[in-house]
Image (tube, rainbow, N blue to C red; front, side, top):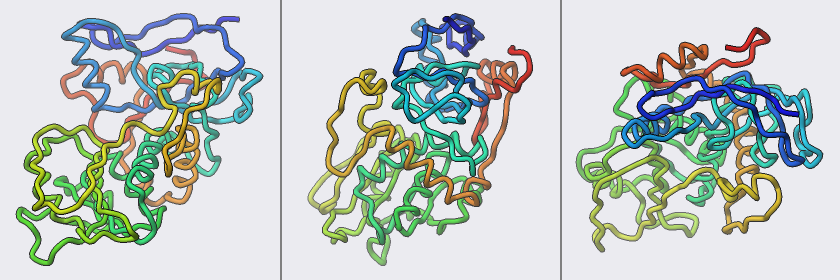
Length: 340
């Protein structure tokens, strides 16, 4: 049996448009999800829309949704029809009314969380992976640079790990939304009192050239818990960094995506195993871990700015110069009414 759906498609010079097609028949390792909301990732999506305008080509947008399972294959054990789930996946969990999702990219949404909070687990899985990559531990002193959505989720995850968290951002309004953590002003020159952090997480898209000399001296060169200090990139950065013995012993860590097995279709469907690096976890485990962490952070999540768009309003935003504003931008899909 085939099922029709729509999706928001970046279509070269035509911009973003509504595209209708039939979904492929459901496999034993997949679930059909009726989507209530999808999450816009402004930085990533704007990048690809601009690229496609210049180079041509098509791409379905979106990679985080929440909705209800309509049907599930025989090999899908953790999500049954009628259950509310969060789904993730590039070109899988798209801005659509219905999506077909392989079993390892699904997670039951905790009933204690409203949809706008639960859907953030799909982004927060990257923060969980970043904490693992940083070997983050209880008592670590953490600085999160950039407290947009990813930075806020990084701070929530670090706090849940038992770290002491400070936050830095040029945007005062963003710092107010991060009021649960100590505000920190980045110095223009090396601090007179010496180093004060074990881990620094960079959660911005920026030129690292002027930023790195201000961050590296903030790391405690002596380390703690038998671990070297770490500068951890969770954003998209460019620029030049100058490395020399004068910097001391520190580790620079780059975090890619959200755990082992992501972007591996065989693993998504539970048809192959992917080996783990010590201290890290698979994407499905990180998704579930983040869901559990978010249930303990209602106050922090409530301080975020949320906006909901109809499909038509979302199309207008995608094709406008202004695009989407900072914050959590959700597109509403299935409401029980007629589809767009």
